[in-house]
Image (cartoon, one colour):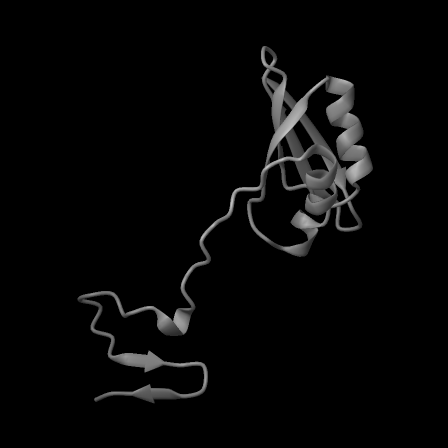
Length: 109
């Protein structure tokens, strides 16, 4: 297993490249910024990027995604967005009867 860590961007976000020593296929985790440095590290290791993984979608973790996708044609798996908190049902047995919507909050008694 090849593991390369980089600190990228103004917010000093940690980006990781994980690669297979046998197949030379790799994933990039949290390409926050500075796609040139990330792609240089990939090239230096002789890897082919197949996937991009984001631990979450904060700006400091995703700034280089588009540039890497364009350059390497890497796949970014889509993730279903979680339901809006106002649309989630109260957990059964929680005793909660409070419901809220984006425009109003109402308590049922």
